[in-house]
Image 1 (tube, each protein chain N blue to C red):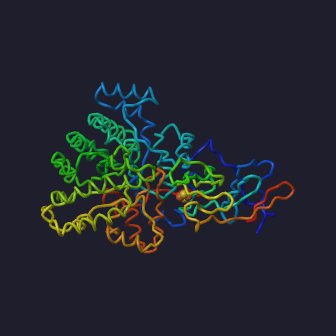
Image 2 (image 1 turned 180 degrees about the horizontal axis):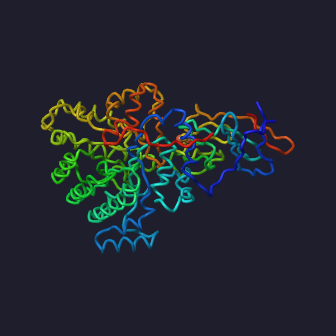
Image 3 (image 1 turned 180 degrees about the vertical axis):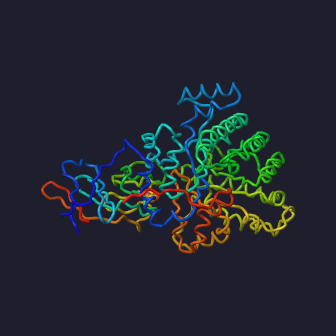
Amino acid sequence: MAEIFVAKASDMQDGERRIVRTPKGEVGIFNYKGAFHAYANTCVHSGGPACEGVLVNKVLDIIAEDRTYQGQTFADEMHFVCPWHGYEYNIETGVCAGDPKLRLKKFETVVRSGDVYLVA
Amino acid sequence: MDAINNEVRNLRFDSYDTGEHLKNAAKQARARNYQDFLIVDVDSHHYESEHYKDVFSYIESPVLRRTALESFNRGGRSSFMGSEVGYQDIGGRITRHWLRKHEKTPADRHRDITTTLRWMNAMGVDYACLFPTPMLFLGTHPQPEIEAALAQAYNRWLCERILQEEKRIVSMLYLPFNDPEAAYRTVQEFGGKPGVVGFMVTAPRYKPVHDNAYMKTYRLIEEMGLPISFHAAYTWGDQALQLTNRFIGVHALGFMWFNMVHMTNWVVNGLPERFPKLKVMWIESGLTWAYSLMQRLDHSYMMRTSDCPSLKRKPSEYMQEMFFSSQPMEMPDDPSILEATFKMIKAETQLVWSSDYPHWDFDLPGVIYDLPFLNEQAKRNILGANAAKLFNLPLQPVKTIPEYD
Ligand code: FES
């Protein structure tokens, strides 16, 4: 295990990310609401660069009390989307939206003296 | 702390390179030794709409040519070509669809040749059969005259600007099927041209394949020894498909629906008996539809042979002599289900791999190469050798897979 310097925490705004090449493969590190989350940049689907796509909130159907459909909205849950085919992952857990049995390999991060490190 | 060999990069949404986008595919290609054997992609795409101005200039009729070019110049408003409702990029989630405009290509080659070769090399593809994108919906254009004019212009443009320039790119040319005479003339004009490896009918349309008007065209294609293919697509204009309210619905059903109808008509009208040497290929419907339809038709056939007296065998036996492109290949959690489908369609000789790149649901060669129930020879047949036989391509690999550390 080694600690790899990623960035100064102050250089990574909320929603920003870095991709780090490590001996264990590429890892994507996201700053989401001040917390740093790191996942293998290899999609569980076909091995695409899972961490290199857009961030978009989970989409919800609005179903009323009477079970009627009332449109759609965004939930608070944030996803990042693999750009190859659209597999979505929860940014805080790495769990795949389409099948919770699937998740990206998670890596630890450490913030020390204002610097963000990846443990890989 | 380890600072060696660890490159940190920021993500950019203002530049794009196809090779970079697919660098994980290139790593897979190298890890699986794709450089050692032939891979042919029987269904891939470019966006001919980016070259409409050029393509339209090939329209023969001066009146239609002017109308097309004027319509192009206006942009944005209702157009000459018509368009199909749909959002294939999943609301911007498939980033290459909107990033590709930033891709830099050298000025001395056609841009589509450069970008096509980039993804081909990254995936480990030697030859790719290239098809248009918006023109997949042209079969629903209300004016057969415009379909015919566009098909001729596009085919001439493609032959001259792409196929003639790059041997690794081939195509089954667009048949303007709503005008049977124009379809026949298309085969006459283009059969035998460099890079033309067959003819393609876009599936969403409302002319039945068993119409007598097509018989001379099938015969001519059969005599030329080329395949005819039916490329699936959807149309939300179809009354049955209008019952779906989400793109996933119209796409999943539409891409099977039209090919199921055409296949049914093709078989029960005895076309395989009338054209026993004609090679028929079904593109982009996945595989499960064929598995299902073979069983449905066989079951009914035994009771209703009088409905299809031209047949000498069960419908599935004819279907097992046809060719099926693999993408979008269904991937059930239990591989034995997929194995049964492969058995049903005689995959080892009849299945031909396709990527459909750069569309949103593209497949890599790994969908075949990583299957646990295929031996190495079967994998190589499906990934390249079957298509090489069909298209008369050399078996020697010609690609260079880029290296990424
Ligand atoms: S490889 Fe990530 S969605 Fe397919």
